[in-house]
Length: 129
Length: 200
Figure (cartoon, each protein chain N blue to C red):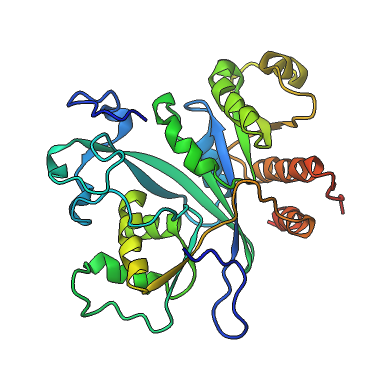
């Protein structure tokens, strides 16, 4: 990714790239969460007694995220269910994490390979579909 | 960051293990179709936002004046059991979105590369990408109606594939066919670990 601003004529602005959007209103202009992470398949789980109502500075979307996360839910699923871009969801989750309203369970790193029993379970699960 | 996989003893809900499989290939090779055929839920779509303005910064005041655009990413889910889920992510088809691949590939179990024999060269970049990163992959040769049929060996030669990379004829619209692709990939991953998955 280039460091300099590409200027007004982005080469990725065309029909195939999708509509031009202004999605960061929700995040107050922030494009990155306060912490790194939030893999697409990281699972988010609300803190047991998380109550985002009445917390200053939280948007309705923050509350919707907490409600969805009463059960473990993946970041990608949250983005799809709330119809928000993943980048926006990450910023909002960063806010919730900072307030202790959610916990985030990141997947294992690249070098990790599931053990044999897991691979077997996947194969037999796929065969049973 | 809490990255604990196991649960504390007692109450808290168990966090499932999510395995990520990428569905790659050239534009129009059938990626979205395959994800749709395999997913247990309606194919989901999420978007990544590209913003030239935001790179390397935590705050973009005045972002409203900077152009951003979104890239739609298809993904699907297969629940193996309550503790194990497979997520399928279709990779963005255009070369200019390569940087999104690194995020998608992080921690991925492996990839399915869909090849369209009418435009075989379109899947070269995908194959290069996974080879360079030692990410296990299988090649699914999508049998489009009206496409010329080539032997798998001639396609393997044309793609310059390692002999151990599985190749499977497939129909991306067909769930059973897609299942066989994924099984082929998981078995390939297991073989790479030296632990073959026995056929029941």
